[in-house]
Image (tube, rainbow, N blue to C red; front, side, top):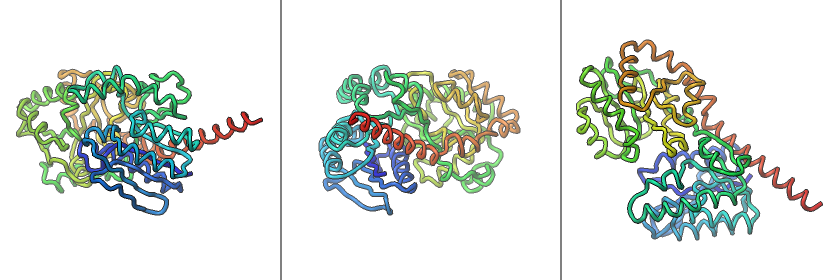
Length: 403
């Protein structure tokens, strides 16, 4: 199968590194399974680039003059033209696209569908339109993007052959749910190493007897979810002298500010934005992970990549009963669900800290969930099965029309 994968994320745009990595790895895994794949994404500079990474996998970049914020959101004119030319002068069975309703993605997809008879599969990871991010965006550019998403996010995707969504709440927004499949985010179980806590702490010089709570990729955009936990953690620090928060992320200013605001600067272990191996070691140093997840439309339509990382490392996760996350925690022993209040986080952590021996029982299914339920490779295989199914259905339908 020949697959064209269109991404609107920059490789080196710090806020989107995780999103880029997931999309790149998905395309690469498809090629490793025997398919011809071209992965296209926006890059810096004025000249598009192209290179063969390995047999069956080609990477091509698009150039552009628009501000990075617009280009990474799928509004780059030159990006759109370049992708359109790639579609028109190429030969693909399936175009796999993310944020397919945005202009730099939608126009190439339309050309592929109606001029090249290519199957289009959109992958939707967030609730961008009305009721979701469109209601939260600020500033002139933000409001323009919100206006666009509110009107076209669902309408334009109806043109595509199939929609893959990351959460059930997103599926329920579409009229024809038989053309929508829910696939939760994959866990990079083959990339993350399960260090013992003592080994990881020795590697990084972290106190062996400390009780460490982990939170990855802390960013300003998640503050409304996180602030209740920060309040509880500040209170916990007054009670326990051996309690620490291990935080990773690229927003140094924000992370330092929360330490000062909630009075736990001296309990904050913050290495900054680190390479993947070091990130792996820091998270392996944690006793538990915390993922505050308010029950909003935006969160119901998300599946945090952090869940996949956390289960790979076999530590219990404390989070809230929001969207499909609730079902995962009810079906498997991977942590604790608590209400999204400072008091609930406080009581839960006090209970866990008093008896660390219970932590292993709480996380006993993490390995199974990482390797079977949320396996990254298995998710890619499921995507490919969707491509094959709609391809077969399309050919059958065409045949019926000609009889």
